[in-house]
Image (cartoon, rainbow, N blue to C red; front, side, top):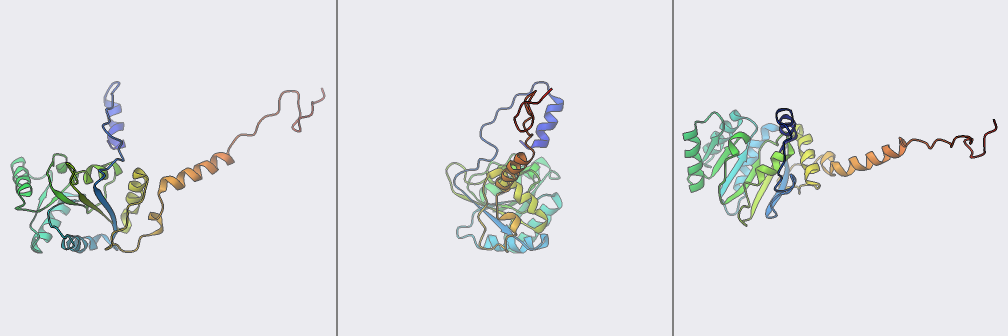
Length: 232
């Protein structure tokens, strides 16, 4: 559960109990994860198209975007490039969302572009690829997203696209996972900020700070600083 939702629950509920099935940073073992840097936000559409072309065994692909308009535009772009795609988000009616999910399950529409709100109820088998077109604000959401693939023992792949504006979000994902995401072959050069796990550097810095700020031991009453007994 994202921290902001947990904090909100604390203000509304009395003595709430939390039941955690698995650690928030745990991901399916069979998900092959990658980070793919892109020069700018506008370059993500062509990169997504290239990633779809690279799939040796084309299957269902689930793409996550930050906004509803972004989902609509990306689905329209991919459909125009001979990759049938639908967009599912909160502006779609329940009946329309169910129809799109049915077409996605059957393979009639092999690409589904979704926002996080609409993706909560998606439980589709044989999703081979998850693309984080826009990285989420909360790193826990990343774990939820890639959990849509590699289900029931199957293998899957998850690729996170990262523009220069999203470096902070990618660092948060690394921090939550406790490791670096491997760099995809189609990636642009990775900046120095994403070449080390933030948590490891933070602990080291914190440890040094604690040593510097450790309080000095006060001399015992009746004794001087050098340990000799003070004269009255």
